Image (cartoon, rainbow, N blue to C red):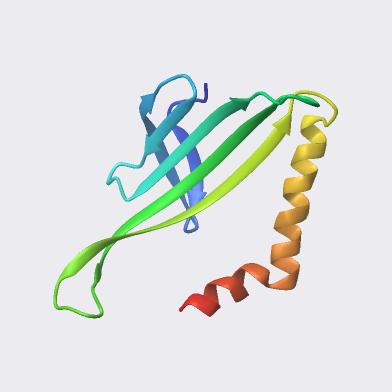
Length: 122
């Protein structure tokens, strides 16, 4: 279980995420105006061969009201970013998993991969 509230920097400002639900495997947090939702979940998966794996996911959703380009009505739009770790129960340390995440983050930053992916869609 994580702290309540979780404080994180989003859009360059600190945001308090207050817990709104927790079922033991998934915790959901929101900021005060509910435009940001943070979801943290853990899903154990048994495997027939090799170590079992725990899927660990963190997702940040951003909900805004935006003008519909095809109509005269404003609509809610949600953008999300997810990070998923498939963490084996043995054989790979938490430090090694964190280093994998750091490597992916660095590849995105250095190569401009993330910016290129987003620009292709807009």
